[in-house]
Image (tube, rainbow, N blue to C red):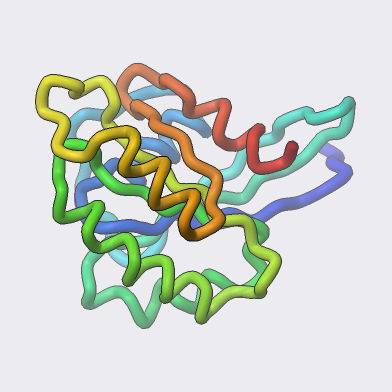
Length: 165
């Protein structure tokens, strides 16, 4: 299928925050509750239409473990955007955002759009990170912010469209 633009995205963040689930929900519109650990990098693609133009999105889902950091860094090259994901039910994943953000800024081009994604918003009763904290972190670092749920698909479509508005 022909497309007017091709945009590459990279999904980054700690292990277990739902990066692979977000990719699967966006590309296949399905949720897989049990997921193998991503080894290195996985890839997905999808066409979307914005302002009447066909846009192909290539999404690279990276492994969150420290041992894969050197591999995943090469995937920043040429990326139009990065989705920096944390789990709203695990404070440690939020606390590690600064390290991920420094990594992204160091290894990407300066005009890459970075979106902060607080995932697992369907688990409100187990929330450890307030939405206001995510909003404040995003504001402080000039990021676009959204909370999502890969399980219910809440805001999954929206964040890919928001990146192009």
